[in-house]
Image (cartoon, rainbow, N blue to C red; front, side, top):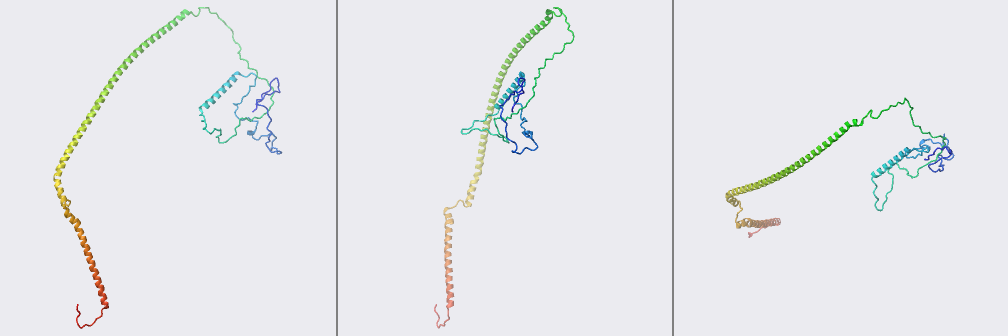
Length: 338
């Protein structure tokens, strides 16, 4: 943006620019040979694209004062506002956490994280424009308002001592001040004595309290020892009673066992003997070993004998069948000897 100062009174054709003049951009908006419809160049259909419209905030623009003698109060106010803005930016920079240093082999790069990216450039786009203003004079400063005088001046003369006698008028005030000072001094002395008495009483009370606390601690320790001794004696007595109870139960159990086993042993032996738990080894060997083996051998022998007889009967039967088929009757004169 270019700021143009109005012409001064000395030279009406002289202007001052904040930026160096440069040539305008000659780029055409429309194709060559085709003028824009219903518009004479240069023409802008939308004020958002009109370069004559200034957009953005005006707080950051440095405007030079129009008068030759700027107001120092205004300059001081602007400098104070600039200092406050710089202080706020520094405070924000201190509160914002700093980016940690990059690791070895890497480096930080600035990127945009907004939804829509925009081209960033350090150079501000500027367009030179010119205008002609009429010469004018600065408004003179407003004179100080002084109201017009009204009424009549009247004077009177008062001699010394007519209205006020210093010695007479000051005596009551001095008496009051001295009395109040003495009273305040007496009150402070009495307060100091009372504080001294309170400190002495507090010291005596603390000594008495410490003695009572020591006596209470001694009695608590004594009571704790008595309680622990009582608990230990009770535990010992309970242990003795438990041992006595266990001894009595053992004696009663032993007596009952002896009384129960006195008739139990003969009965058990008799029952075991009747049930065969007490036996003769030779008889048991004969019954359990010899007799089963003997019966098995007898059964085996009887089975072989029966098998032999069965085979013999089958052979005889087959022979009889064969002889019966081949038998022819013959006449004999003499009996056949068997």
